[in-house]
Image (cartoon, rainbow, N blue to C red; front, top):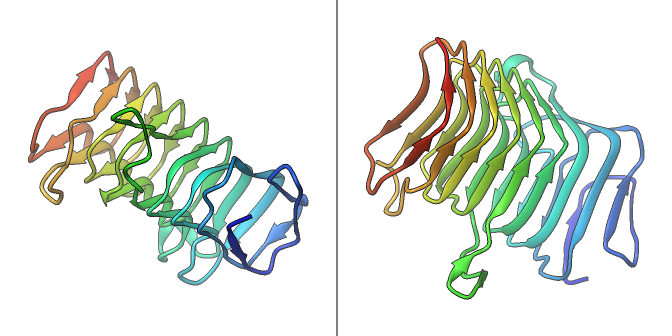
Length: 232
């Protein structure tokens, strides 16, 4: 494979591109860098990642066509009080992050930047973050200004001390999530990006967030906001 995988981890890479974790607790950060082949799947099957120090549990760099599922990420420090992130993404695209659990982290997922130019015709193919649970993090999901083309669908995001979903990025689509009990539920801010906002917030259940349910600010373009159920 054209890929570098580093970190002290008991995993098996087989000929079908499958990384299998044993049902154990892992302590060392894992980095996947430079993968551009066919689908590479990281399957946890109940594995746990205790995130320590300032390194994320899994760091995906300059890669595409990777899926991560079935892993529980949690922090060695309580309630997002340290700079500890479950999954961090840099310059990568066409990822699928699904059916994972993120607890007590600074950010469950920190999406720093997306690789652009990977497209069918002229339309970039978005990554997918779906059916994960985020609880008691500072940020459930944090999109930095260069983190574009991501669909966030069907997740449960609760008790974030800052934001359930925060985005400076453009082309982020937030659809059919449960976002409850956070300080702020969903926040989009177009002020920090040359290509911010112009995404969607559709069909979400946004309930009992302390300061605000949905906030959009300093839009460069526009946002589609439709069919959300927002309660105080």
